Image (cartoon, rainbow, N blue to C red; front, side, top):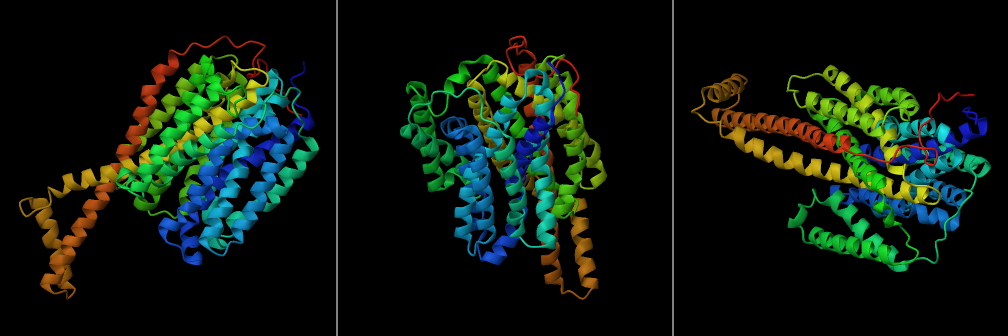
Length: 522
């Protein structure tokens, strides 16, 4: 079989990758515009946060259901419909006149977006033979890594130069393009599974379990976690819903989500490491822009631009990783990727208050190489034991696990930063007293400087204490961010030996994988 990729296949992969990129960018682009939305729509911080939460909850539910929906309605038809729903909802979001309209249409947008990414990966698996799968996954993998990175940059640029509405309107031309190209070039799979009738109980338990979990992860930190009665109630509902969902899907004849795939050793291990990938990717994208804005004084746009070279490095490395995946065991490549990610975290954990933007460059480049060594090999591990109709089901489940990994990463890091700041502030505050010569000299210097400008003594003393308090708080926040980098690094370090002892089945001709020979591009 020739390893040349035909023009039609190039069109297919560009179509599905562009649709996935559109959805991934939108996941993060809106975060930057929240402040502008608050002012324009007259919303509070608590109300505007539902713009993010509603999308995330609908998105993760539909990611899980994507395999069943594609089998029920046809993968091509479902993919095109998802793009249309996403695009129309985007326009409706941009036209919203109050916050609750926006929240509603963001929920609809999440329903459309959830079906895009998983179905896109299933289309790639069906379109490309095993000889070309590594290269195809490399092209697609670029969108997964680059999307969350360039989203904040685009959001900042659009908000600064246009207005927040255009963070949604910009989806219209790309959505129309992806829809037309899907209808013209994407084909239905040769084999469709028997799915039976809709399992309404399974759907209900999925919505309650996964939907409530996503809301808890998104809102828990802002609402004080289990100090909030409604977060506690949602947590109980989530736990009960997940347990009921697992029981239902393992006992019903035609489940909407095939949880039996987790009996496959390779799929289970790949999904676990996919969770780790989502945790590391989204938590680092969450931490770095905040660090750069607080301690380097960068704007949201500049913070996003700082991340781009590392993402370009990932894109550059992806094709090479896809080429060599079949020659080198994927667990070894992934272990190298995790090691590089750990090194990236350790380097950033050694920053200080005097660090500059330049000190982020090489750690982010290392992270870029590490991410390229993680995505394709982990996809290979996850799908290597699946065939036929199990592949779209497996891609949906693995994407859901990776998405939840990202949600857990962001939620845990947000809570960790808050708690560690409190701890460090208390520790540092113990040293601020008249019995500490350095602190006392600094206090007197500030008082003297203020008095020299004509400030009364009592007011100068109050302002000096406030200034010292601000210095302590900023230093405590800095230490908490450094702790966060180190914790993510330790998390990856623990996973490396587990990955190295993984022993999957040899990669043979029956499973989708990377090419054994170079792929020639036309």
